[in-house]
Amino acid sequence: MTHKKAMTNKKAAQAAPALPRQSGAGTQRAQQAQQVSPADLPRTPRATIALIDVDNIVIGRDGRIDAVRAHAALAEVYVQLGRAELSLAVVSESTRVALGSDVCFQYTGWTWRAAEIGKDAADHQLCDFALTVLEQRMGARIAIASGDHIFAALADVTDIEVVVPRGHHGVARALRPYLRVRRPADRRQFELAT
Image (cartoon, rainbow, N blue to C red; front, side, top):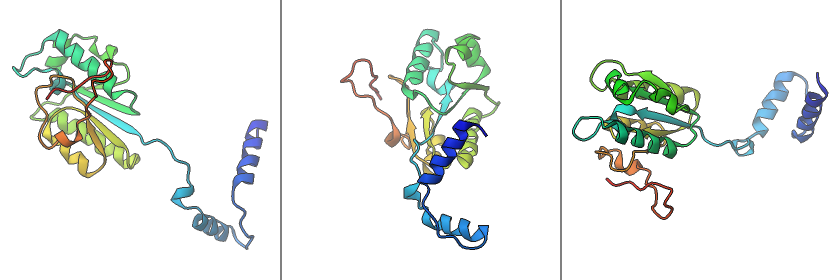
């Protein structure tokens, strides 16, 4: 054992509440468990899981992709999401081709996956990912970069927020209460025009 570890263990032992000695290790563990309440545990920031439905963000109202506007919309979402513990971006092959093959390298904090084929397949992939992660990280917050109604179901499981770029073509009515709106007081921030 290194000196540093020994000192850390010694400090932890000094900080731990003293327990009356009784026979058996099981008795000691039971008493220790009774004395520790959730309020005594150290507070850690809640994890944030970002779900990015790339097609929903970049495809315009007319169903087309303007590469310049699409990259601007993705950059805005990237800034608004900030640092999430886990980020999954799902994109269809046609959208990836329209954006250019290097789009995955421009947003390095995101894990990219190809969308499966089928109606709302990307949405289902993102929801399945979120539910799987929530099994391991109970109480994590989910930031959703999409306006699709399917994500409203996640609000029943955990806290959600919806992040879309300015001028986004639509956010489902069920998701509107969860919109993150940036105040225009700081010109570096974005305002949401829906």
